[in-house]
Image (cartoon, rainbow, N blue to C red; front, top):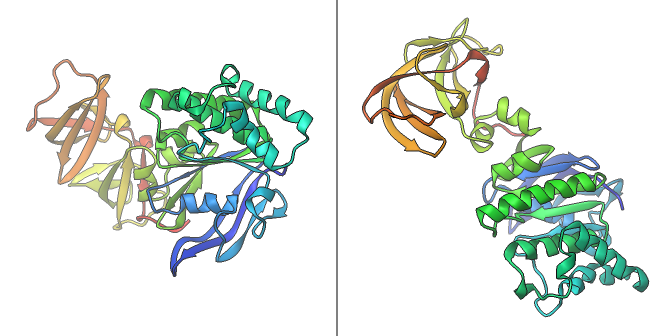
Length: 350
């Protein structure tokens, strides 16, 4: 089957409302691309355009070198797993997994072997004779994935596949999906999620969506360590976004000069400084800021401190403190110059 996905300025509209606006994006063969964004950002619409469930108002969709824009879903050679699994309750596991193969009119003699292969790959071989109602949520999800893999697709579409699972099952399934990706290196995966942990864990690259448009795209490390926009900084991981004034050798926050790389931003400009909370230390150090504690949260291995510095709220995730500061206490926090990124503006188009 063809692998790789390309959106060529794809737009989708419902009743005159644009829900996906001029999406240009390429998923390379064998790549896991996460579409990450809030509800209504256009990420599920993009996936459904690949699946053939929505028709673009403009633009083209390619799978491999094939233009599939006008093809029905069953001719696109894709596997798909949705949030609610969509298993047939009256069919045993093995029949659910065989369904796609039968729909594609696979040779009758090869179906049992393909079903067994997919169930083995997902760790569900021992459950072939059971009905969906006899399985846990995590097991049902594995069956849905096995059904998608049985047709040996070049492209696998995953639409919020773990959102119905509890935290422990979700963690286990993330590990399983990562393992499957290693075992299927030629399959391109488009993974829709609003969960940043899932995106950071699984994706080779993340496409950040908001308000029907692509806002940013890069590796998880690029988007986390050096986001281009405030939206990316706040949506991919947690961030301090602090209003500062750019100077000739750094920035100023509430009268305190801080040494950071200004990246060529002109002096005198108001910009946003991004620092991840786990990179903010408690006590004296480089780029020290003094302020008043407004909130203290115990998070097990860490305490999160909220500190008011000249009207800006600074979050610091510090190793669990035996005696944390009290609300109203004056404390000093600090961060290294290389741990800060200067953003010259807010959300920009991708």
